[in-house]
Image 1 (cartoon, rainbow over the protein chains, first blue to last red):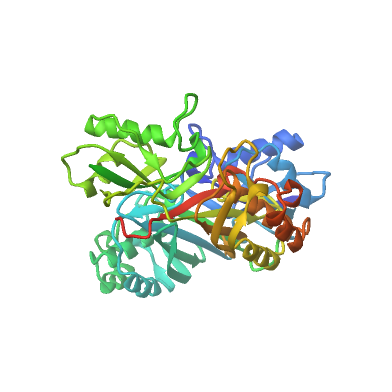
Image 2 (image 1 turned 135 degrees about the vertical axis):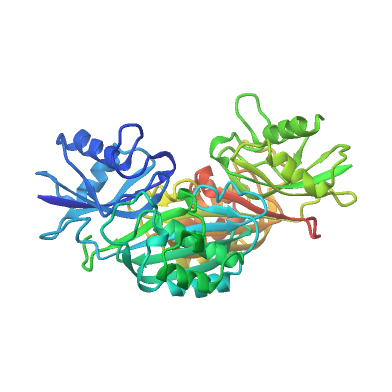
Length: 252
Length: 252
C-alpha cells in the first residue's frame, strides 16, 4: 500500500531533503522514524529535493509499506520519534497511481527578507536581512514578468543537468508587511516546477531590481537570452520555504 | 554620560534578562560586550526584567559610561561582538533625567499561539501550539474586560513581592491571522506595567475562555476577587515577546 505524508521542517540544521553520507537529512530522519515505529525499511520519495538550510511548511512525500494502523494515524505515530525540527502534519492512503514527485501539478515557494539596518535575532532564522528598503513597487512589476512559460536557463545553477530549462510560472507576487518593528518582504512563486536555485535567483534578481542595480528590461532580456550577468545573486538558503505542493486533487 | 539602547533577543537559549550565577543572561552578554569593545565595566538597567525563554523585539536599557564614539555608532560596535541571539537595534545619548526602568510610560507584550493538530517546527520557536481552534470572537470580547485600571492579584505569581498589584491596561487585543498553512492567534497587551507572569496568565485565561472552560463573567470576577481558580494556566515563556517600550518621547 502507498502512503502519503505532508511534512514541515526547519531546515536550519539539516543537509536538505536527500540522503547523503556526511549530513543529517530529512529523508533519512523520516525513513529512520518509519523503521523505528513500524519496523520496516522504506524509501521515501518527496515532491522534489530541498537544499541544505531550506525550510518546508508543506513538503509532500510517499512510501510503500504494509501497515496495520489507520493511515491517518501514521502522522501522530511518526511524530512520537521525530526530532523537534521535523513534524508530519498529515498522513493518508495515497490515491490510485499517486507519485509524490511525478503527480505534482504545482509548487509554491516563499522567499523572505526583512529590512533593518541591524540584524534582528527574531527574524534571522527564516528570512534574510537587507539593510535598506528597496523599491517594492518596482519589484512587484518585475515579478509579473516571470509569469508564463519561459526559459529559466539564466536562473539555474550551472552544475544542474536537466533536460529542459523551460518552466511555467503561474504567479509571482511581492508582498510588503510589517512585523516586530521592521518591514518584511516576501516573494511568493507558484510554478509547475523549479530548476536548482531558481527561486533563490529570482528573489535575488527582484532585489537587485528594487535596489536599482538592474532594470525591468534586464529581467525581460534574462528570459530571452540566458545571460547570468542580467540576473541577481543567488540568495541564502535560510530565506526559502517550500510552502505547499498541489496535486490537483484533495489528498488529506 | 548616559546611553540608551534598543535591544532585540531570541530568549530561547537565555536565562532571561537579569544576571544570575547559573545561566547565560542578556544583561550579562550586553555588559560583557561593552567591556569587550569599550574596556569599561558597566551596569545595564532594562525597562524591566524578562523571564527565561521570553523574547524581546524592542527591550530598552541604559548604562553610564564615558565613551568617545558617537552614540549612534555604539549599536554597530556592540553587534560585532554579541552572539547571534542578541542584537542592538539602536543606540543614542539618553535624554536628560532618563531611566530605562523608571521613565517607561507603557510596555507592549505579544503572546503568540498557533492552531494545529500537530506541532509545526516553523512556528514552535516563537509561539505555542494549541490543538483546536478556540472561539476567537469570545476571546476578543474577554480581552476588552482587561482594559482600564484593575487589581491583577489573581494574575500574579505568588512568589512576587510587589507593593501593589493594581495595574493599568491601555489595550488588550486578540488577532487571528493565517500563515504557513495554520492559524495564528496573537494576544497583544499594552499597559503601564506588568506583574510577574501577568501577560502569560492573561493569555492563558483568554485561551480558557475561548475553549469554553471559563466564562466572560469569570474574567470580570477575577479582577474583583483575586481567586486563582477563575483564571487560566500560565502559558509557556516561549510564546511571549516584549514588543516595545514607550517613554512618551522620541529616543532614537
